Each structure stands twice: as C-alpha cells, then as structure tokens.
Amino acid sequence: MGLNGSEFWFPDKIHTAPLDFVLDSSQRDFDAQSSLMAELNIKYTQLTPGRFEGRLFRADLGRLAIYMEYCNQAIEKDIDVPPGHFAMCLGLRETSSFIANGITKSMDWLYVTPPNGEAICISPPGGTMLAFTIERDAFLENSGMLPDVADWLMAIGKYGEMIKSRSFVQGIRAGALAALESVAHATTPQKLAVIDEAVLFSIASAFSLEWLKSDTLPIRQLPRGFERFHHARNALMNDIYSVHMHKARLLNGTGSWRSVEQAFSEHVAMGPLAYSRLLRLHNARRKLLDPGRIDESIGDLAAEEGFWDWSRFTSYYRKQFGELPSRARERVSVAAV
View 1 (tube, one colour):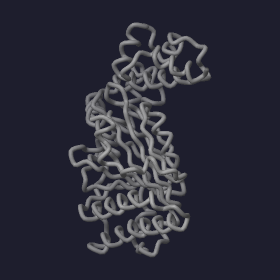
View 2 (tube, helix red, strand yellow; view 1 turned 30 degrees about the vertical axis):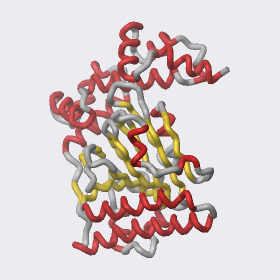
View 3 (tube, rainbow, N blue to C red; view 1 turned 60 degrees about the vertical axis):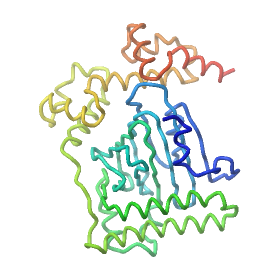
View 4 (cartoon, rainbow, N blue to C red; view 1 turned 180 degrees about the vertical axis):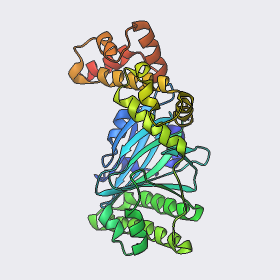
C-alpha cells in the first residue's frame, strides 16, 4: 500500500490550505517524518526491509496537537514524553495491530503515556496511527474531567497504561477525526480556539464517562515478556558493538538466552544479534546523511559501525533501506550544492 492508498485515512484537501497550524507532509525518510512530531522526543527504527514511504498530518490546535501518521514499513518508535504533556495513541485500521510497550492493541485500545513517560511503539507495515499530545494542566483541570480520573492519570507509571473499551475509544477517535476535518475552516484564532476547547472537553469527558461505569478504567498490565525485552534492549543499546561479548549483561535479571531471544522475536520479529546489526545500519545511515560528514568516505563511516566488509555492508544496507549507500550520499551532495 503506497501513499495513494493512505489518502482515505487523511482529511481531504487539508494539505493545500495555507494554515500555519496545519502540516501535511509526504516523506521518503523516516527520520525526517519523526522530526515533524515536534512535541515528542521520538526516534524511529525501520524494522522491515525496503524503501520507506510515509505521510504525516499535524494540527496544532493550541493546548492540544493531533497527529495522523502513515508508514508503509514496520517502524519501532522510541518515545519520550515531555514533562508538561500527556501523549495518547490509537490505531485507525482494523486489519493492522500495533504494539505499545509489549501490548498488542486493536481498534478498541487507547494507549496513554504520562508526562516524562516512555513508550516503545511498533506500527505494522501500512499502519495508520492517530496520536495526541495534550497539555497536562489544561487536561487535568478541564471542566469535563472528574477529580478521581485526574488523580488516576497523575498516578500512571512512566510506561503508561493501555485502556480497552470500544465505545470509549470510538468516541475519542470520532471527535479527533471531526476536528481534523474542521481545521481547514479555522480561518481565525477564535475558531481554532473553539476546536481546541471542543476536542479537549470531548477527551476529558470521555475519560470521565468511562470511569463512571465502574469507578475505574479497564486496563491491561504490561506483559512479562516486555519487561525482559526492555531490559535487554537497554543493555544492548548501551553497547551495540560488543553484543557477542556481553551476553551476560543482556541476561542479567532477564532469564535464559532463549527467553531473551523469544522476547525480541515477539516484539521486533528478530533476535538480539539481528537487532544489534539493524541499529548499527541505522547509525551508519544517519552518518551518511549528515552534511557535516560529507567529506568522510562511506567505507570509513561503515567501519565506525563495525561493518568492515564493504560488499556485505552494501548488501545489508540495500536490502534494509531499498537503495545503495552511495545513493544516500549523492542526495546529501546535491543538497549541499
């Protein structure tokens, strides 16, 4: 499914509107796409091989920002939420399953990450996601927010919570999509403020109404496999160049090597050694695309990431990113002229 196939899921005609609070961008670089999600410190890793195609629509309403994103490849998204915001995400395609901190979520799930929270989200190939960032105080103090819900939200641990309720999630999804269709008509700051307030109230009241059903929210605990994956992944990322010599570090507190391999397989569909190579390929790619390193040879940059065999590096790179490393360097050279 290419960019044209994602058109249905995006607001019509928005991208042509000259509005400074709206961005609609098609990308062939996943790092460029992630950089457009300004409120989040987010880093992408492309998990499936091939050329990347994506699209990001962003509406900055004021106290709330809404993102709709499409990626043709499976993407791991490493997210750090800023201290003054909540972040939320949900899927838009019933046929695709997303994973957030180890929990597979369908159309009935909303993932909530608190201020200063962390999330590792994996979107499947062809996945379309809806996400929000909401100012903490504006959300907690909204007139639609019950005090008990505000207390619950502030008590969420740093890895967030997954809430499952079809009617709850459908209501939030419908309100957000209606807002995205309305922003083209927000030709004045006053109209934009009305949309901002309406969406903020609708999300806050949706939480409150769901809470009133049973004085709590229906959540799912993080699976043990995610804790194992997260611990081993952090150890791996601290020294991706010496994974063969540091199995003991990966295994510390996580169980057997087989259990670590299984945890990686469940979350990123590859083992820790393949994941280590993937991270090094991404590091090499970012160095190749760095204008400040344009005078350094491709071979030297590859060697910095532990790829000493030029032919093997080229083969890995082409398979993963759908182009030769020399082509990536050519784009930087052209841009520098």
